[in-house]
Every structure is written in structure tokens, then in C-alpha cells.
Amino acid sequence: MTMIMSRDERRAYTSRLQPYLLASLLLFGAGMAVGLMAVSYFPALSDHVEATITTFVGAFSGMPRLKLAGAILLNNATKT
Image 1: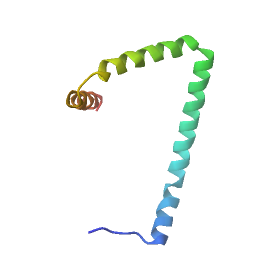
Image 2: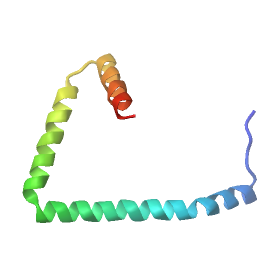
Image 3: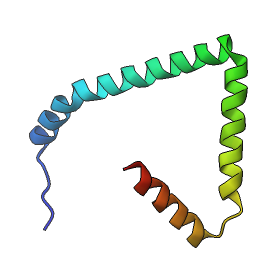
Image 4: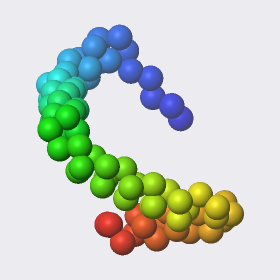
């Protein structure tokens, strides 16, 4: 059974979520600004991060789908 909210309920719900949306957007923007500043001020750091990500992606790019799914599951399990 599906419960559908009325227009007023949806409006109240989204208005309650507005502060969280704004905070998320501000944090995302701040992180993007810090990332851009780090890249422009420390190019060696960005080269190191790029090499690390390339190595990480290279390890998983040739895997069959089932092994890749297992690797992702294992990765998520170790981080939780």
C-alpha cells in the first residue's frame, strides 16, 4: 500500500529539509573551493593523488563483474 502525501504535507516536508539542503550545498562548495586551492597551490600533491587514484582504478578495471562486486562489497565492509 503506497502512501501519497498531500501538497501541503510535501511542502511542509521540503521546508523542514531546506536547512539541511543548504548546509549540504555550503559544505560541498567549501570542499570544492578547498580542493581547487590545493590543486593550484600544491601541484605535486595533486599529481600524487592522481597517481594513487590511477593505480587504484587500474587494479579493478580488468576484473569480471562478479569479482568486482565482491571487491566492492569487501571494501565497503572493511570501511563500516
